[in-house]
Image 1: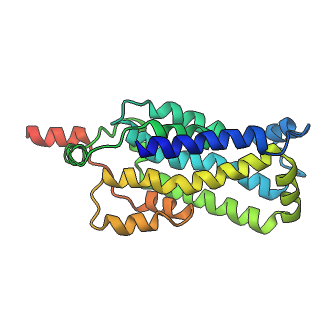
Image 2: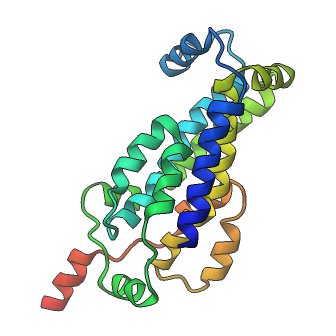
Image 3: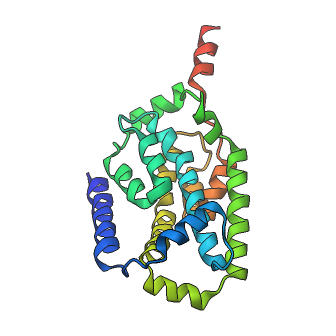
Length: 229
């Protein structure tokens, strides 16, 4: 119940702020989005280029967490995950608010029986995907921080709704990662889950390190085959 109140309130507050309190749209917003999406980056502040591309990586990080959770939820996690590639936290927050928390008994049953790792679940459960996301994030951060024009970014943050809301979206998605990680930890066999949960609070890289090191899920199909032998 508290999840629904907290995440639902955050979602309503973010929507209200984005449309009522954030700076107004600028005439060059649509051309900027098109150029960022098509790789026409000449003349664009590297900080904005890095931030825009990080907003493509963060939904991938969430997909690695909530699509697995969605296998045991009645809620279609894939829909929220897909939409998040376009609107970020505007899609992730409703999922976190509506999803049902699992009881300890349900968690133990799932951990014992495993989860079907077929199709996309096998891909997002792979540590190699976590490594690729970590490398991509590191390159973008180094590029943006070292090559970016900070005064120009601050000016655009103050005058452009797109830049303003995208920046806040990035911060909000980063802050919410430990919540999604905590649910994922419960489905896996960790020798010291509390240490992992503490690590997850490291901004952004805590989640990336988690994806690179978490043990694979037990495959329900393999477990079933073993029981038949």
